Length: 174
Image (cartoon, rainbow, N blue to C red; front, side, top):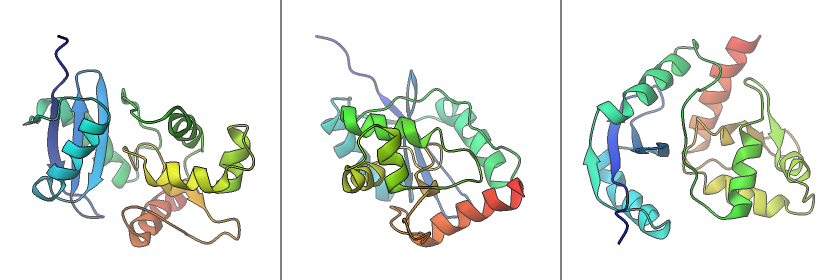
């Protein structure tokens, strides 16, 4: 029987509140808004759904580079993350998340734009659903997706966090 990977977890404080980080040997697999104690059950459920071992191991070493890059991002010193990531989701979700990674720092796209980019222009609602299931927010910049009227809509961490992240990027890209 193949041994499933452990998920190494840590948390960090950020300007938008606590973040819980999850990583497997191959790379970052999970970021959530909140303290580890509050997020543990959600991480385990996500891991079980995606056939990962659901044993969480607190480990600062496996998340130190993730923390370093996030801290630099929040300080406006990093415009592109350079982290190995492990995406777990449906083929459609992964296609959407890869399209999100192509949105340049400081720019936004609409859900309709993303649907067109992935070659499925009628899948606007499904793109929104995939955005909502993004397991690695900030690094996979779902905060850069806005409504077709330019309004900030939908963000798992709350619209205040989305607004803050876009403000960081707009201040640095001007």
